[in-house]
Amino acid sequence: MNRNEIIERLSLSEPDSLAALYAEANEIKTSTIGNKVYLRGLIECSNICNKNCYYCGIRRDNQTVSRYLLSDEEVLSAVDFAWKNRYGSVVLQSGEQQSAHFTNYITRLLHQIKEYTNNEVGITLSCGEQTGATYKEWFKAGAHRYLLRIETSNKVLYYKLHPNDDKHSFDNRLAAIRQLRIEGYQVGTGVMIGLPFQTVDHLADDLLFFRSMDIDMAGMGPYLEHSQTPLYQFRHLLLPPDKRLELALKMVATLRLLMPDINIAATTALQVLHPEGREMAVSAGANIIMPNMTLPKFRPEYLIYEHKPGINDDADISKSKLEQNLQNAGIDIGYNEWGDSRHFTG
Ligand code: SF4
Image (cartoon, rainbow, N blue to C red; front, side):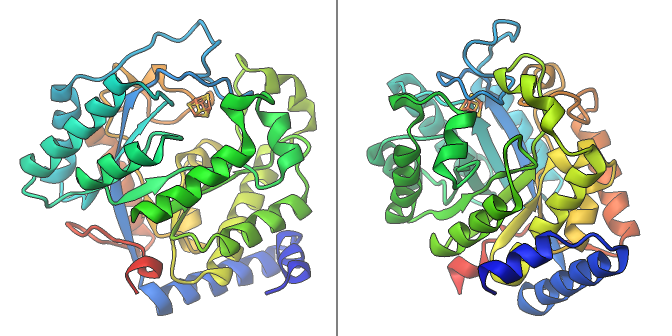
């Protein structure tokens, strides 16, 4: 698929053409990697972040957030829930911290999770930009997948979303994604969809960027505004929610056509725009869902965007709702499987 063909797909708006695109993507997924969805229990282990991304509700300068770092026991209790409920994997996600204390914390958790679950649970990390030495240490301790979103592959747009300083360097972020590959991880990245100032051309280039980086996993979701962030002032430039959802689904489907064997997440942000947004993305080519395992008392403090769904649900409620919805849509769940990217494992 060339750039024009990608733009053509991202510009579709007729219901019949959209349905055909989603069906084609779903068919390619099924024939390449099967019909299963893999569950990753998402554990938001800390909302402490030393960055100031303009779109993010837990950015350093947002003083209205109470900061936390989960104890080892709190993380293990969430892991226990995921494991006992036959989720094949967990994701440890946090704001960005580069201290030795934080590095050791994650290393210790990785060892504990592997030991506690007899190495039955796969582990994805999403803890931001780190040095090669830290990535190496975490890989050795048992993490095997890493998600580091670029948010946009367009440098000019990137600096409309981030301060233009050393801490938020576009080039460093790219280098960090490349470093993950060197250290042996399955590498995931992703972008926000429907940002202010973003065009369909930017999004087409994002998809081509994924292909050029030969990524193994993608996590893309619609941009959702947060009132305590600088980007909020541009909310009048946003597409209406239904169009943002549609654009996100077109991105998922087009990426599936472009990279048939990678893992593509149906992100929680989709669920904000439609209660069954994640299931819709699965039917348009996604194959990963990351249900939130964070203890309910911490969930309101991890709001990258507002109106995040399920912040008052406990893990049991979120789990049964999701499983029921997937069952209703005729989608199989890969229980007790790591669900590694076929693009990586071959
Ligand atoms: S997007 Fe990530 S790095 Fe940026 S402020 Fe939010 S948590 Fe920190």
